View 1 (tube, rainbow, N blue to C red):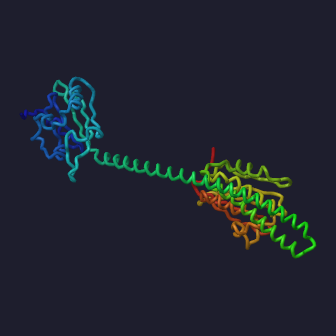
View 2 (tube, one colour):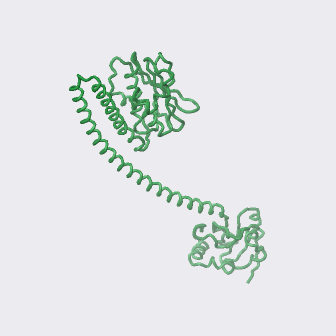
Length: 370
């Protein structure tokens, strides 16, 4: 039965809030029902004030809900009902017909010589939908990640098997080539009297040696990209790379800040190949230098020597596979290793004044330490 509701004028200031506000007496009589609640439910204040809220909304009569509210009237703390477990205690429809997801707070309030409940009803529908969408996207991403991991594992195992097969095959072919080259050498020693036959044997030995070089190349090439790229100390990697080279009479300058490069673990071979290339083809080389500058496009790492330099017509050719007879596979492999993490290399020195190789490291692929 509807009861008179003296004092509801006291709470009219809550009509200005964008959230629902209800005031309840200890017997669950509605003393105040603000404008927002009217808009959400379609129930006017005069239709519900003075009536029992539990009777109006049986969803509140659940023991797990009602027990907690009752404790508030007995001097207990505030009670919060989350949208995850109790999203529709007072069902309110959105314009599209869906129910609003609610967060309800029952706060004890001293009023009229007793403890009353000030109830805040917040519409968290957008947030709830966002959370649901996020969780759904997370599940999808986790499933996709799991599939990617499975695919990566399958690729890893396949590569491992192929590399093993390549290694075995390469070993067998190399053994056969060694025997063949040995017999060809013996044949050359015994056929010195026949110049034409000796010439044929020379060509055969050259061909066998070329095959041997190509097979040796596959051993290095199959390792590129097998292991994940890692951050590597630039100066330390350079020093480790050239430690096995004969640098007697060569001045070495590493003028670099404390910096790390994100690259394939074979980055060390790049610097080895650059210095080794200078030693083999620089002729007049007496010094080498590593330095760097930073620009809008990223980091520019420069390697220079003071040798005879690289002729203009072969500056790009030296990085090609088919040019290996002049430079070895080193520079071709170096470009391939760098490309794994989008690093690039070119030669832009002045012929006659030394070689100058410039490695471009994009932004995000390097970082300063300290």
